[in-house]
Length: 177
Image (tube, rainbow, N blue to C red; front, side, top):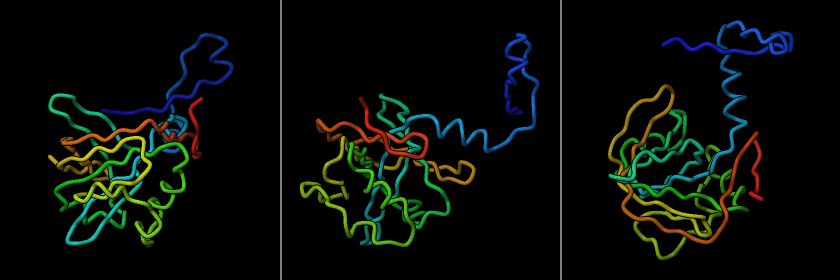
């Protein structure tokens, strides 16, 4: 499949002419996807006696029967090996006001859990306190997806709160009105 980036010039738009295809520019894709508002998640796990986590806004619902979601992890992430081998994960859907948590888990080479409050009732997986929702599940499938690892997760438990979601759009955290 060939993908082509299209940009409409003012003269083409006013004349009703179709835009002419230009060579694909990955920056145009980044701009378009960056303008799209997304939820913000922190995916966590226990592996070989250690806790691991990463920030992901590449998170999506896949199926309700069976209950499946997917997240994507960059192969350059500090926690890549742990998530290649872990069996279970928690997907913490962050709440409004947790932008600092998202930024903390997005950084490399820091103590991810040192400054983060975890919900005490969840001893099986690290669940971040104050989330909008948390999904816990088993990794059902892994696959390479370009420079990312796709984790397909079968959801086993859902924890919700009344908190509003944290939203990310145009490189900034946003509040819903």
